[in-house]
Length: 249
Image (cartoon, rainbow, N blue to C red; front, side, top):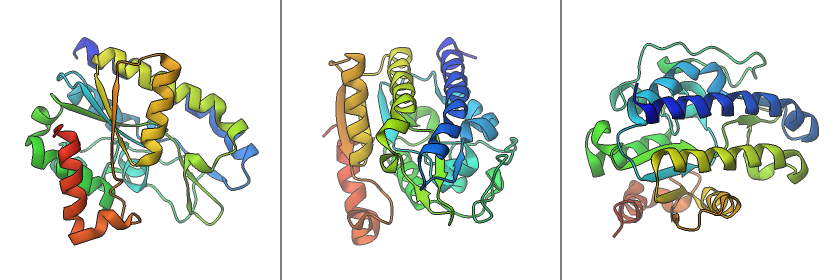
């Protein structure tokens, strides 16, 4: 394993432990959060494999999402639409356990999950369209999420990090910002592309805290079907805008 990949594994394992330590406080202090899954824990094997395979190929641009959705929640891979994780990233046959406390509507089926994630399908499809093979793609970009926890209310509805009480989230946001700055240092990254307004906002905050003013921050629209722009012309408008930002034109 390359030194950069080993360093990424080391700091991500620490992030995993820190997020596990923060889960209880988040659930206790936020009435809208009853479940907090940590894919870096129960889906550690595929995530570690992702870092080992693609963390040392030379990327200088970080593509950063907000937090796990259904894809990463099952596969452990950022924007991890199961089909793309298997067929594009070639991450297969690795153990994914279930969280200790699970919501009956949010069971984890791991890398064999049959349910696609549209956001992940669009992101990885765009990356493949621009760069071709993943080994070529990761010479240019590295994909991660800012906030590792996948959270739900009692009904199983997603709760995004922006819906947390500020006082309850200060510690974990500080941890996530430090992780991002460490990834930047390991990769010698020069640019962050935030996927959606919230990710872009958190990138700016992390850069300010770390005093890394030389890092450029760009933004692409979020590819979620909940974003009307992402659905225009069957996703073609989103793809055109995002492609221009990622390739720097």
